[in-house]
Image (tube, rainbow, N blue to C red; front, side, top):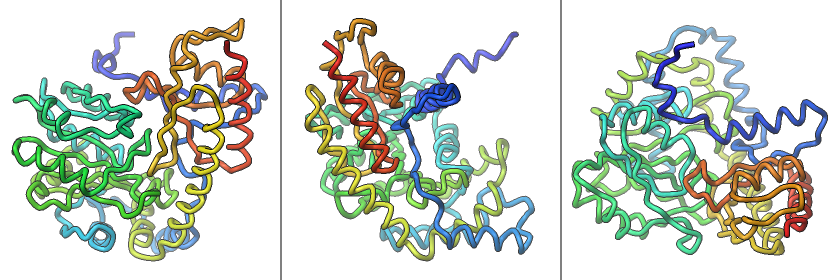
Length: 396
């Protein structure tokens, strides 16, 4: 078949590919423990589900405004003021079918052919592929385990060229769990001030899953606020992955541009999910706090286990629900049947021998690393890591 060359510009997400391989093994009767998960293993809180049920009963079943219901956009503003001390109006908000669509809308609204998007490594798999879809050029800034997977102002300055259009990062970061402090953000902002044509996309989807204290948004700095696009959503902090509800907060010109893009792709997102979102954002946060408390417990246990596995270099994540260790110690080793040349080989080895799924670091721009999730039960996490430990011990 003669398909569009558009498909050649980008790759299938490795996160989805590994989940698919795990499902295929499971369908054959293999007991696979999933540590590739990118979603909370909790159900949506009851008061949010009840709001959705009420919305169905009240016949909120028709098309919605492209940018979202007014009450949901107001609820986003309320949340941003309550949690981040940020002042936005409903006209600054565009609600989308998940934060992934919010990212896509923004990239397509900002990036022209050949313009550069600066992305610190490691980064979420979709960032680079969206830039390629828009015919932009990805410029990576390499971080490291020694830096806690955070870049310096000097690295940022060195990456900026006359073609630079967007700086895109996440804090807390998927996959590393790195969280930028206010002081660290101030250092980056000092650079942004010198480059007024550069936009800043801040993915804050893991905001509530933060082990380091208060979340700091880069939008708090007034000197650059009009150039900041906050990307957020309800998937992670409210266990609402399947509800598909994300949003941006941005200058009205950018918001209108994103609304225009979305109007030709999906129009407005699900009416029922939006009504549930109002309740999620404006009422009881205790379920979200309880989730983070449990993730904190699991994080401590995973770090305790990993510390006793030879060769793994693992920075402590300050947010999200992943560890992202350097596993290059195992490159060049073999168990006699399987040889490990890179992170992809190691992930396939762990899947086929230990029956544990993970995601290779190449997908995130860090080929020495592998992402392991702790969004699973403590029982499954402990069993999964026992299997990993045993499988790695066979590599010589």
